[in-house]
Length: 100
Image (cartoon, rainbow, N blue to C red; front, top):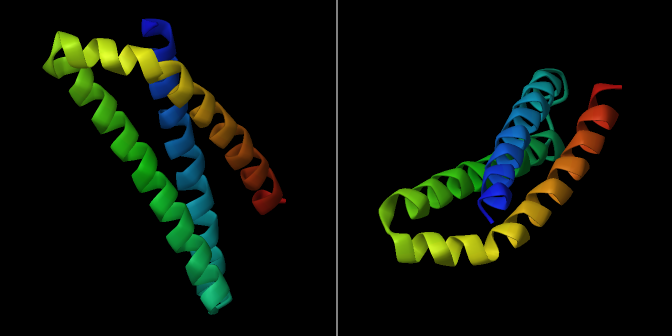
């Protein structure tokens, strides 16, 4: 199960990188197009990035803290991995569409 945990953390870092690209692009657009829509896009992307940072911190804390917590984290690691991979696919599509 440790493989799922490491893969989930790697995909969370990938999501953070993709979100940095998205936020950078949206901030460039916000300088040109001042609207609630572009501000909302920046806010949503920033909140998604915050979610991924919290995931990394949460899981690293569980793994460093206690063996019992580590076993609990291992039991759900494959779910987190699946969620992060789906989010990575969605963010990759969003980066591709945004950068076109």
